[in-house]
Image 1: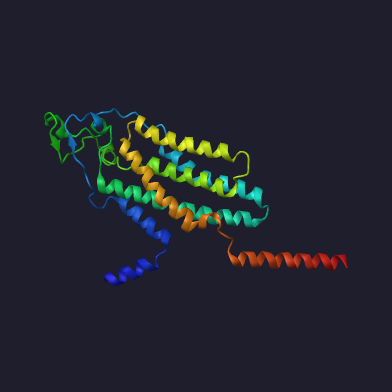
Image 2 (image 1 turned 180 degrees about the horizontal axis):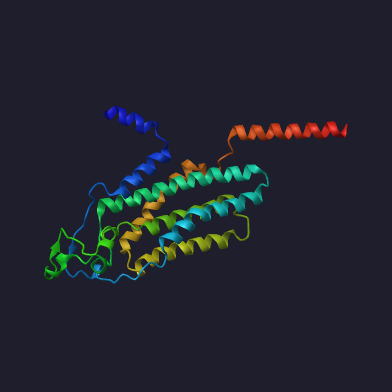
Length: 263
């Protein structure tokens, strides 16, 4: 049975493998980790004030902005359909790396179960009313059902990891493919400022501790290196050979027709 499962997994599409792991984590079929808290811990006593950068904006920008930037740059460099095909190849690999990043972050959140800075406000553990001084409480029960699976998902910062993943990807892509274009540096600075702003906002909103944010940055780096160097071949990906051959045959056919008409 074990060998059959290994064989089935090895034949499964890489996208399906990562998506399966992500959905398995989100289904909460298995008990995750849960770090306890110290009574009256000031680091966990901040009020919940919402998100400066919410998930909708984060996902929308980090998913679609790289595609828009690459399409604009490659269309300026090459007016043929090959530019679009090349962009879609890179974008597909970017999305795969993005999905790996998201899944890995969610996996760590599930395993660690670290309380957020607004833990007492949103979880309101019933054990808080009976603990004394700086007593450590290893097991607790949240009294606010809405925050039952969110108050203890602080480590690491998913916002930070995804923001740096997208920001550094665009910055390096522009360095490789559009370093001589005048607006490039301005776009790179804007991306750098945006990802830093997102990271800082997670701390000022008291949604994460500083070490959660730092962990998010660290996590994004090796996944980015893998995405850029292995998946995108350092932005030297070529259009599939069969597409190039088909394009060359079509060009040759069109040229022969033109010569026949001229003669």
